Image 1 (cartoon, one colour):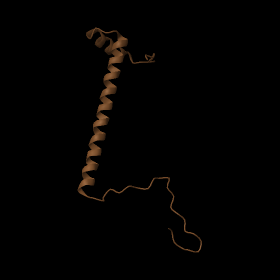
Image 2 (spheres, helix red, strand yellow):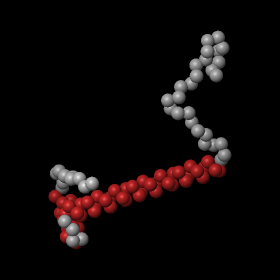
Image 3 (spheres, helix red, strand yellow):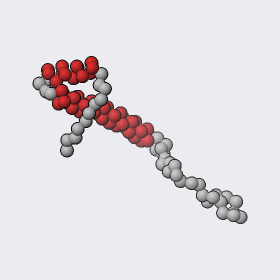
Image 4 (spheres, helix red, strand yellow):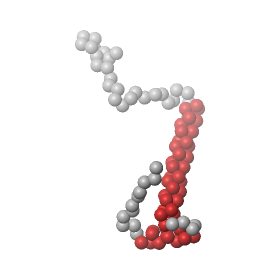
Length: 91
């Protein structure tokens, strides 16, 4: 589903650059703006996904090189058990 997007107070130089690109690519200004937004978003998602994969691979390699080094942590909302009265220690 296509929707409308209005950009308010765009710098004149940006509008002129989009207009020039649109002319060179034989597109309307609107079509060129959409193409530029799509390219930018795909580039951003791609670079983020690449970094995420690198971090995951680094952690996997570390975990494989040191068995038991990375143990699961308790969830942040988990509360320690309180000692029952008279027993004096936590279970």
